[in-house]
Amino acid sequence: MLSVFLQVIRRDLLLAMRQKSDVVNTLFFFVVVVTMVPLGIGPEPALLRDIAAGVVWVAALLAAILSLPRLFANDYADGTLEQMLLSSEPLSLIVLAKAAAHWLTTGLPLTLMAAAFGVLFDLDVNSTLVLVASLALGTPVLSLIGSIGAALTLGLRGGGVLTSLLVLPLYIPVLIFGAGSVGAASSGVGFTAYFLLLGAFSLFAAVLTPWAVAISLRISVE
Amino acid sequence: MLDAVNLTCERGERTLFAGLEFAVAAGSMLRVAGPNGTGKTSLLRVLCGLLEPRVGEVRWRGRNIRRQREEYWNDLVYVGHLNGVKDDLTVYENLSVAQAIAGRDMQDATLRRALDAVGLGGFEHTMARFLSQGQRRRIALARLFATTTAPLWILDEPFTALDQRGVAALSQLIASHCGNGNMVVLVTHQDVAIDVQHQQHIELAGSAVSVGEAAC
Image (cartoon, rainbow over all chains, first blue to last red; front, side):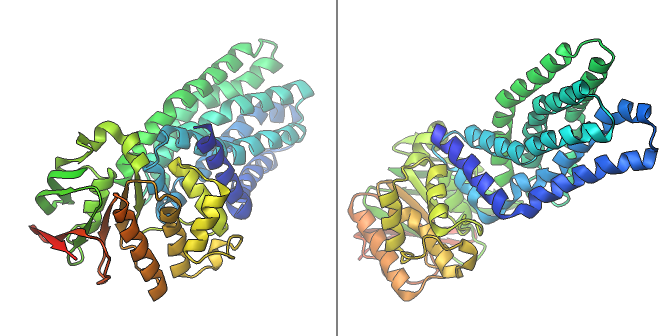
């Protein structure tokens, strides 16, 4: 069982490494959005500090949505998905592996890059660390919930727009608590509650979404 | 062993076949024929459990396949008309990943032997994007050579894009698979002679279906 999980992650990472453009597109989008906002708003340090977490989180969320269509579309087009559906291993495990690989190629790099953006927005070290930690805890939810949207809209024309419509409302709590944790930390309220909630969202999503995705995939492939 | 009971399949308002009944016994082969668009692929997908029949059920060892999905799929190898081959993986990686996804053993020796058997020996480390259509098909078919222990093979147009020697090797493999007491269901337009003692034919033609026995 573990072997399927690891093999699927390994395969997806290998494919991501060999066709870099997909991953690079997502990361480039993230960098462009985050760096353009201060240019548009103006160089007022206090203002930038206030909006930093929100901007980084919104950009991460949009970047994740941008990368969702490729989650299952390629496997669907070349027939690999059919073979996944006919596996004697649980489909939800394969799905969890795909979501994990998606996080490793989008969520994780976004989180690491956010550390550099702390400087751009004049955040102090503490707030930057909180921002990075909130992304580390929250971005898995983006991949997991996003995979439901990607599975439901598989094979539909204009699926991309529909995916965002389906998935965005479910991303909102993560956005609120993720960005909120940085504000709470800098105002001295304490961010523990925010982190606990983000962690709970991630665990909740890790348990329930693979199962929902597995069902959606079976319906989409019919 | 594999029984179709009163199968009816609809695709977008159109009934492809209705009341289809047949049984495939151990050691026999079922050949599905019929013009384009009569539901051959749909029938195979129903038999695999990828598609729900409108009415009826498919039984494996006497039980509905829906009640024993994972056990059934462990016994089944399906080669569809899509190869499931990734351009950016090497030939060897493609086969080993496909076996891993199916939840099967992926010992190095087995995989290499299978690749040799389909004539891809020496291409192990070639990226699949550089292969011809027929060679990609061979990667998909290598799964059969690597999984001769699975009691049921369902093959959708396995001979397309293969050269004459490929066709001969595959029909020989199918014959020996059936000879070992396993079952093969296949769709093919080519008139390939396969040396299996117990053969059945299903001719799908609109809603008229004829089931016939043939012995070679």
